[in-house]
Length: 287
Image 1 (tube, one colour):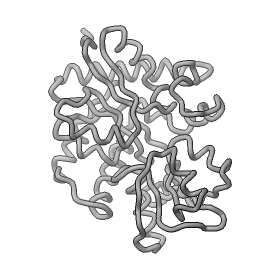
Image 2 (cartoon, one colour):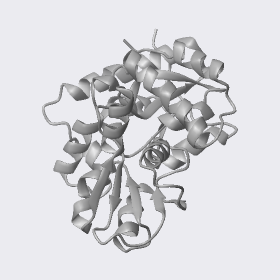
Image 3 (cartoon, one colour):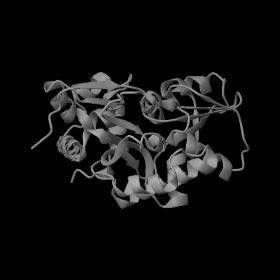
């Protein structure tokens, strides 16, 4: 019997890939007295520190270990791209200094440091801003480089910027794994049946969306950040793949590699490698 969604709280980003995947679930949730927050990825990643955080959260894959003491991984609802990821942008005149990124220890942050070290660029000052503020900061010469995510990868040329590297393509070349960008987690204290029910609902919501002739709906457009319908479509087509329904063994392997890389490139996790491995082994499928 499906779990009640009354008082259940969901937190996702307003980006088209999330609203595309979760539109059906959001409708069911609101109809049954639940609630939804639409937050920037850095805000979503920070929810682990709340005393009573949301029941289901879409987070950066790189931040998942911060949640795994209280949350379980879901194999559905994520973003595991094929050789596509954050872009490193520059102004053609190479203005400014340092690098601006969308969040501390996000997937973009870890992939940036991986690429930076492989390219022997040395350390440089890092600063963190909302993803949509990054292109203007590079275009005006405040920073030498900017690492962009979401729709900025489709619109940066409008500001005269150029792409120096695709960190997703770089990751795929080095690891032969899909690019781990975003994943979904559910609170452990809601129980096993709830976790499986939510996973099944997300798979159903995703499959309904994938079956539509036009991926963009009024719901998606209403939450998109100043995007044309064509950019919304490209956004969905880029970040929603078969691994959004189930990330598969390759997706789980990419998570583990990313978390290990984070320890060497940024900082140790409070959750040891054995606990992280257990979380991967016990990830919940909706199929």
